Length: 112
Length: 116
Image 1 (spheres, each protein chain N blue to C red):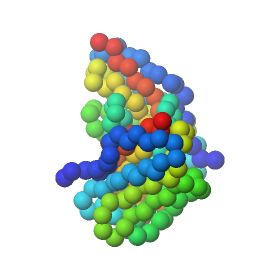
Image 2 (cartoon, chains in turn red, green):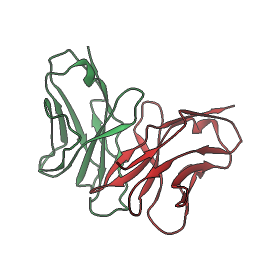
Image 3 (cartoon, rainbow over the protein chains, first blue to last red):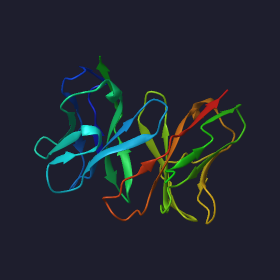
Image 4 (tube, rainbow over the protein chains, first blue to last red):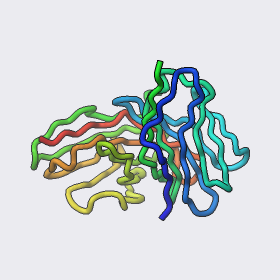
């Protein structure tokens, strides 16, 4: 079965340090991959997507992600984390007719 | 642009009652998706609809759950005879079309159902 995996439950990082949220995929063909963020009691907000082309994708709020086909990964990164980045982050892939399947999510805690 | 509007934001029901959750997609969007988020879990796809048409309901429980997206008005997710296990956040998303792989789903703020 196709899936994305987010192996860590929680990511703790000090403010100003680089932030990485990991995602690996098991998707047939050319994967369409997405990152979304969820703030407390809010809906999901789109951050970025990989469809094709450049493996380094830049998104909202200073986030970027690198598509790595050999490692089947699509890790989310930010060079310098802010306290306001504390949220739940979801990796997802597109399947069928424009449906998204999500990973279990990673809680990011940025420590002041 | 008001985005995807969901109401009510919070709904409390007793076991056996009915819950109706409404979703108005973004202006110009004709495709609606419903997802359910259980505590400590990710989002699970439930149903995908276009106006007056269910495209995919493979994620919907076979009983008690139904969804519609009429020609006029919002999409409705209906849960009959609710049980405690239905307590969750229900998110609606919309997109302008379902055919392009590049389409991004825009999510609403969710409706949180609590079953007593």
